[in-house]
Image 1 (cartoon, rainbow, N blue to C red):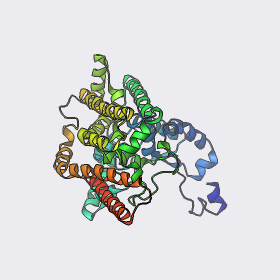
Image 2: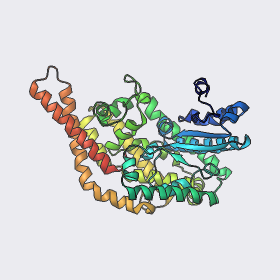
Image 3: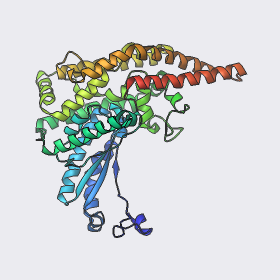
Image 4: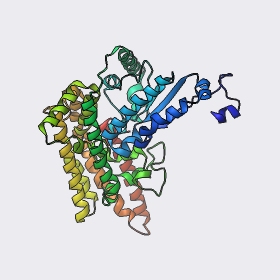
Length: 410
């Protein structure tokens, strides 16, 4: 704001641009209410913005930082508290939701229900959200589809204004704190502390190849020499989507939801039945779990991962966590299918696409195997260089094919 004022961009002449703070990691979200409290306590600031403030909530990096479940709960709490701070200072707050197309990046194909399940008093007739990647074509690819998408947004925001929200009970909040902590700990241990994870991730997925193929709008990494922490949220999610593991969307969920006490399990079932936000979160995870494929993921391991005892064991552990998560979700929803009955159309559509996508996954694993073998060779002949280029082109086509088949990959 000071920079704008220095160059003559002021509220008086109508040239001042909005100042929009972004909170995207778990720590950012936890500290956000305190930051706004400090900001709104400055009268000259609230006067300059005319008591109207837009705040961006980051979904991609918070999920990559802490796992899907912990990030969701942090976003819920943070928005509640920021709305309370804004009300205290008489500021009209608008939340800008920085989401991607995938569940792992905050996306939700059930747009109407997603808006309805937002925390109470955080929309109030104002809703701003990003649309990016293949979701632009999906939601705005033609005039008719764009009108339908805007109809859903408009009707959901209007309906939300008259909706009697379910306020989470104290015992529900306590349960969510437990789930969030266990989920975050499980997620961070594997991604950050497990020494086998980075080698496994880079071998079992096309993560390294994504950076060299011309299929993204930005570099795959913020720091080319960095590890997982420097990888952008898009390739992090995209790489796991390609292998049909979808690990970024469900890792930690099974550990958080798993309970041995029947009383606690019954409480989770009550939360699922009576709390729209919790139900929508569980259903989203269930939907993405229905898109995972155990055998396809295992084939990538068999074709690409070094045959060492450590890496083979880690691959099995990841798939065991997948099974645990499926079982935990089914225990809470009491459904026969992990995807749930409310996404029957999505499930049917996915089933129809399987015969076309499955072979592409098999081809992709073979292409990666051959391409990586070539890259280990020194002083390649002209024929080998030409073969490498053909393999890279074929790999790019396979990546786009799998992405199209998964439908929500960016």
